[in-house]
Each structure stands twice: as structure tokens, then as C-alpha cells.
Length: 478
Image 1: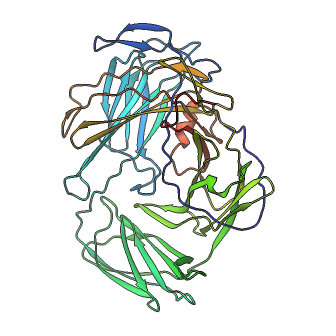
Image 2 (image 1 turned 30 degrees about the horizontal axis):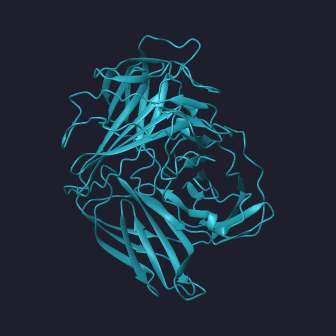
């Protein structure tokens, strides 16, 4: 939603730090009835329509009859994403009514698409099982179940899923000769190729030969990135000072390919102003980098500095000038005793911006079985989480998204089909989602459906979310 975005505050150049815990949790709807669910147990049932102050709920002319919805499932944006926007084939898609009763089950095709029957006020879910890593039996299997409330007028829906796949290519290996211009005072160079191949060489070397490279699964091209390092001013580490990139190199099994990087260029800087913050320790988990196909992140870096500014804390960061690769910037602000605010953006390059950590609402106390948000904006969607161990080596994360609402009731457990078999048997929901609603806002999104078009994608957007610490004293909600 466009509300709440502030004009850039331009200040001096500085840089970012590390943020890997963009872990959210939330969802919203009001409960009106108490009925018998599919498993014979009594559970709360959510009516069609949002709770108080809800926008985008399945109210008004919402249909009570099943209707088709076109679903697209692709890889979610992440530091280890295999191919940004890569369609996920063979993923199970489920639909349920508002009580949690199973309605339909489909499998995505080679383009990550399927059409499934759904009902307004119910749910559409994606079940994603992450199998072997690098061809070996995993020590820990991870299952994701992502559920989205079906709202009136929803005819298409994109659902991004973090696949975490590490499937090794079985193509015949090829040799790659890579060269680049020398950078003055460089201590060494990092060379990255698509799909998790990396190598470091010390200066004065300006070339390297990779004798055996298998490329990416089912891909006919690959990319190459070079980062030049110099010793930091304190002498305790190194800094990346120049970047080079070559895209669309043809993969030729059994052949030898020469790749020449003609130029290594410097990056550019920008500043994010965290409004109202005074303590630099309140800026946490901050990073920025260019996201390239094949699990490549070029120029991943922390802030150059965090300092006091005119309206709060100024976080200065830098990024390589590599046109065509989206810049992913993310971080977390911790000015609250029982929660924090996380943000991320996908842009064409570094840009000055301002963020108000107090803008979005945060979970507050509510009666048992219900949840409530305090004052503030509700955003475009609300998310809840549940996580449990299904078997000895299998973890399950269930995430539910709903249209924004000020309060609501517990989400029903969803009936799983018996044929949804994985390594350890059928998938079952063994835990309730947390009663901690966490609002998410994408500033460029117009509504709940439009939120998913941009969420965890490589399309330029700015996202903010408000989290409450589940380990905080439940009796101290102020």
C-alpha cells in the first residue's frame, strides 16, 4: 500500500549490516460459529469476511459455491534461491473451506501452474517438501505448508515458496577459463558461477581455470561474477571495492569456454533513515546484495556505517553497479521491548529512503482463542506461523496469510489428504498457528491479491512488517 512511505532524507554516505531473520508470523479474520470439523473435533470457524477494520475480506457478494482459481507457484526471493521466479513443478496445491474441510487437490505443471476449485472464505494451500540436498539423504527434512485465505474476486494467485533445493546438475562437466583486469592494491578476487560454485584467488592473479563445472540443472547458460577485495583500513579484514559480471554464458558439456570480464567497477552508496531511533544497537541484521540466477548474490555486504541523523539513525550502504540484477536490501530495527520491525526492498540500485518502525500495528492482548492488533496501519496481509516436528527428522512450518483486520479468531486446522505422502508418511497438522498476528505491507501493492504478485519476488517493491517476540512476557503487553 502506498500509505506511510516517506520522502527520502538525503544524508551522508555510509553502509549496512546483516539480516537473516526475516521470520514473520500472522493472519486475520473474525470467528462467528462453533461447529464440528472434518476430523470430528470442535474448532473455531471463521465467517466469510474480515474482522474489525478489515479490508479485502471475503464479504459482500462472496460466493459460497466452489469456483476455479488459477494458481502459480515459484521460487521465493532468498539468498540461496536457485532461480528467482523459477516455476516449481510437481508441487501439491490444496483447497479447504472455512472449517478446514478438504475440497480439492492438484499438482503444478512444468510452468508452476494449476487450476483448482476453491470457495470464498476458505483457503488455498501449497505443500512443499524439500528432498535430498546435493543428491545425498538429508539429515533434516523440511516441509512447508503455506495457506492463503480466498477472498471475493480472487481469480488468480501467485504463491512464492522457498524451495531450498540443492540438486546437483548431472550434465557432463565443462572447463571454464576466466580472466579480468587487475585492480590496484587488491589482495584477492572471489569468482562465483551459477549454482553454488565459488573460488578465491590471491592477487596478482587475474585469471583462473575451472577444470570441471557442471552448470545448473536443466539450464543451458550460466553467469560469472568477480569481486575484488582490498585490505580494510583497520587491517582486520577485507572490503569489496570492484565488481564484474557476465551473464548468459553458454553451457557446453565436455567443451572449454573462455569468459573475459572486461571491467571491474565500483559500487554506489545510499542511506536509509530509521525515523525516531537513537541507539545504533537498535539496527540489527542488515545486508544488501545483487541477486543473480543460480543462487548467486553479488556484493553481499553490511552497512558502511550507522550514525545519528537529523530524524533518527542513518544507515549507509553500498552496492555494485550491475544493471539487470535486482538489488535486495533487508534489515531489522529493534526499538521495542517485546518486538521489532523488519523491512526489505528490491530495487534497481541503491536508493535513499526513510522507514518509520512505529507505523504498522503490533499484536496486543486478547481473550483466549482470539488475537488482536494495537494501534497502527494494518498493511496488506497478516501472517501466522506454526512449527512442529512430525517425525524424528522432519520439521513442518505452517504459514497462513489473511487480508488485514484489527482482530480475529483462531484458524482451523486443515484436513490433509491421505495421499499426501512424504518420507515419513502422510502430512498431518499437529500444532495451532501462533496467536501473534504480524502485519506485512508492500508499499506498491493495491490489495491482498496484489500483495502476492510482489511478495518475495524480484519485481521492484518495498516491504515492511511488524513482529512481536513470542518469548516476551505474555502478561506484559504494553
